[in-house]
Length: 209
Image 1 (cartoon, rainbow, N blue to C red):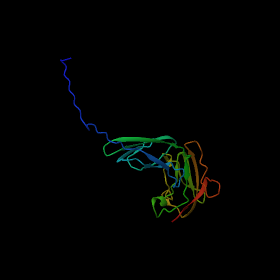
Image 2 (cartoon, rainbow, N blue to C red; image 1 turned 180 degrees about the horizontal axis):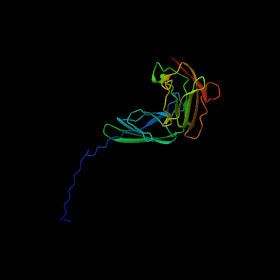
Image 3 (spheres, helix red, strand yellow; image 1 turned 90 degrees about the vertical axis):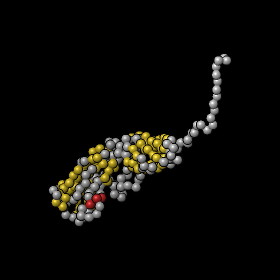
Image 4 (cartoon, one colour; image 1 turned 135 degrees about the vertical axis):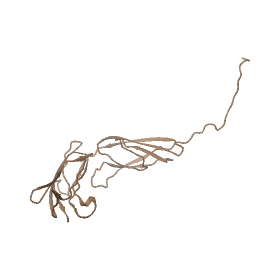
């Protein structure tokens, strides 16, 4: 034992443990749109001591905004994750689950003005979400088909009509539309609802010039 040497060193305040931020958020469905349910959700950051944010919405889309808004185009269980970082680089993570289960919807406008206004008012633009199959047709007062579309992008109608036929402007007046839609959950669109009347799959749209 006499041949063994021993020594001891001690330090004070040698380890610094930084405080982590606290990740937390709330989710609110957005309902003040023409299409309800819209599949749109707002995400409000309630984290403490955070200076950067990383959101994963569960459908392959990400955001670095503090309070993002996101639209889902398909039904299902979505795992929403928020990772926050503080000034010292420490991280914290929280997550919530959203059951996105909207039936899908379709809105057909009743008027547009090709010669003035914004994109939204200059074109006939059907709007919808969660659509699997779709057909919209426009007929003149004499029964002639003047426009139709079946194209969708991410479950939404993707074409608009400028009020022309073969490149020539059609006159002002009322035209008849007919529409069909099948949603991703297998339900068929009941039609446009007007006040207390039954839903209809046939209506009118007015060209204003």
